[in-house]
Length: 314
Image (cartoon, rainbow, N blue to C red; front, side, top):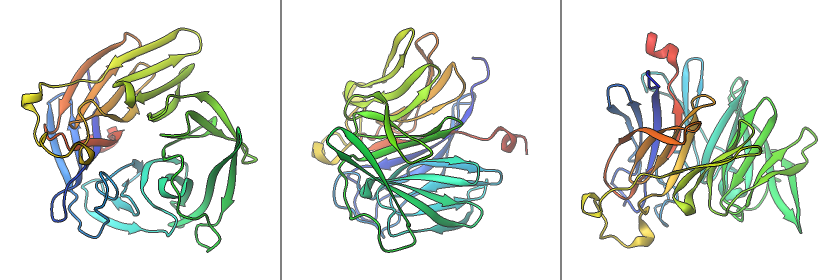
């Protein structure tokens, strides 16, 4: 790979306290090895209980002339220069993780409600919600109006952390789904494939599935025809890490894999803790390059996307 892409990443600083920075948005140029922090997320109007909870910034998406970034319970719209255009809230958006755009609809994981929401990018309003539950071995999706009052109760049984929408449909998964789930046009929810508990960023890829197998500290691609490719997450000498003396329940452990975007059918980018982004050649099973944002063990990558190439040329 001769020309590395420019990426945009978000982060969450676990265990950070009120008044401290607890996340940000970064533009990462792998060719020059230059990292620019575009947004320093230090708002105090959040719930600081728990390890990650409401801290930091999460999923990333793009429209023609805007960047959309999710916080825990708010959706932000930025211009390409990262000036804030606006923000949007909804009572059923809670502990959001990843987001994904398909045409004029933005799909958001509402982790705190075991739900998927859609946001209409033309009308600038939340349009539709789907609450996920399970009856025995059968998954069920119950639609609801996020602008009404008849939605689900606050719950987090499956910890939905990923949604991906492509020409084949809508796919989503969570720490506790133990499967990549597929949503059909008639709102039937089925299992596309099984997954290990605790994974992130699961998505169809080529003839199989790719994901951060977070519990095993690896990126894993499982092909239906050709077995699997496993890439270990990069780790550092313990003496080089910062804030390792904090209570383990309040920090991200080293090697915690989260954040992924596909560049093409051969290359992907994947995130890990302390905030590090790796470019991976899946076809040849090797890590080509890595950029570390900080050695603070509390700081973990969350969202990853390829920076729009036409913005580079403007």
